[in-house]
Image (tube, rainbow, N blue to C red; front, side):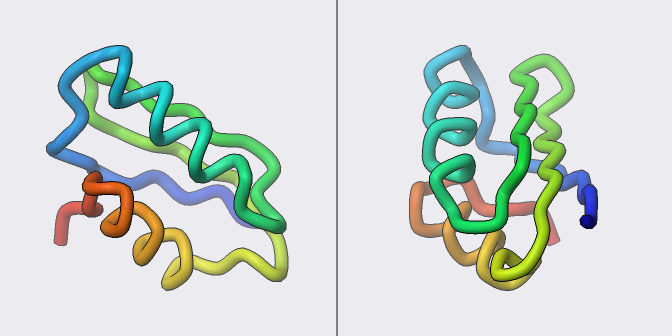
Length: 68
């Protein structure tokens, strides 16, 4: 199991947090998702078949791209 933290500058409110947590938690292999509007950080714990590339791709798809 892997836990990764991403900086997501586009998080600005509770709606953003709820959207990210809902969408990412539906990905196969994702165990937990915690997003914060205050710190603009998303912490995701996942296992196979989820991976960082797939997570970053989905984050961009839902309009919350991970900072480079």
